Image (cartoon, one colour):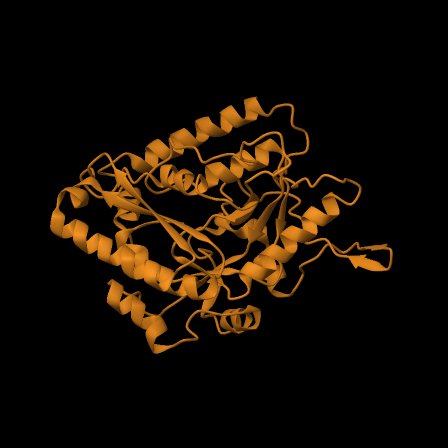
Length: 343
């Protein structure tokens, strides 16, 4: 997880729901580090979260460039993600944004499905190999009548209603039926998560229709993504990271984020595209999910949306087009990449 100081409060609920190790990279502007009062306040905020979350490792990231006029347009989001990945010591990692809160069972459901994939991949192999698969965690968001305008009003949602965010699948199903929850950003960016087919997922279409019987066991394969609706698909995913102890190659199993992408926009999509062009298959996790907690709009997003006074949006769009062209050339010999649905 990477975040700025004004979002660190969102971790309280995540820490209650996720018992496994968490790596948090916290953005510290250089001006905060230079100001003793601001630095003291920042360290207090970090210490408070660490006290609530003993399973969490916190890595401060001091940004070397002051913010440009108009907001944190140089926010080094992918540099911070890579810094967090370098601290991962597990075979797999779920890469999250701080405002997405896991369902209470996500940790054990994810581990069960990862183990199923590893077991199936090694049935005829004495050496444990970790399959290069990406598992999509369906993402939803909690809608509110009046968006909260500051941190305190946002925090009151959960303080006043412990059921504000769905805890388990049935809670989410009821929340969507009541129209209090929707697919994440479905009302403003339908391409972002449409490929997950969340409506089908909510009906418990979690497994491939074909199943196999072997030695009295029934094997179910979680639903595979056959094609991408859009190159703007940006799900939250569980991916292999650390190789097995018997591996002769100590390098991470999947690629880092491209650090040329910064600020807001295209920084997560580029990583998904890299995995896809590389030939990594995608499947969808059953039962568990993440849900977005409302918060005030970030200054980074305001910069992204302000086309007139800055070039961030234009620069990242241009870089992404160049990046896709580079991937197309680099992986031209890969014939098993997940295709686009209209190909």
